[in-house]
Length: 252
Image (cartoon, rainbow, N blue to C red; front, top):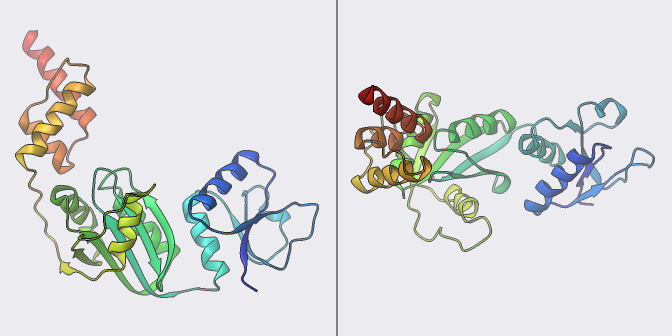
């Protein structure tokens, strides 16, 4: 009998969030009640930290972070304390797609808030899914954001590969995640730090255009500041604030 995940909580918000997350991953689950016996088909239970002591079964995961808790529950469901191979695929962009594959099976997917945030998700995956052979694979497209990701991962001393993204474009509800899955499954060219980030003139101009829009037409940041934003050294908000301060100082 194939085991499934169970949701056992009286916290309506947590229940709603878990249901949405499991459906988005196309993972089978069953809703449980404290008043009823847990079916034998349930292999791991997701519940709130406050309710965990009420669940008298072996594989119980108190949910703090939705994504990592589902990942931990899947690991328990499959009876794994360690994976042979862990492949982490990243589709580079302003908000990169991240896919985690353990022993050939997709065990988690994410959307990172920025290229630098990919490093957080990679480190979290390594804690959640300990493995003997770990490789991080990044798509070769979007060189500036790709190199920002490589720079953010430099201190982790991982095997990182750059993969040809040809054939990874998807017209789906989650194209970045689906591309990341394909990237994770493809071998690539190993790269090692240091990495130099070189934004293109077009990227710099696009960031200047965004600064004008985001400031309501009040300010257009300099190409120097736009380059810093493109490299990940500053956020666009910080660059706009600096430009405004400089403008006020020049007027004063």
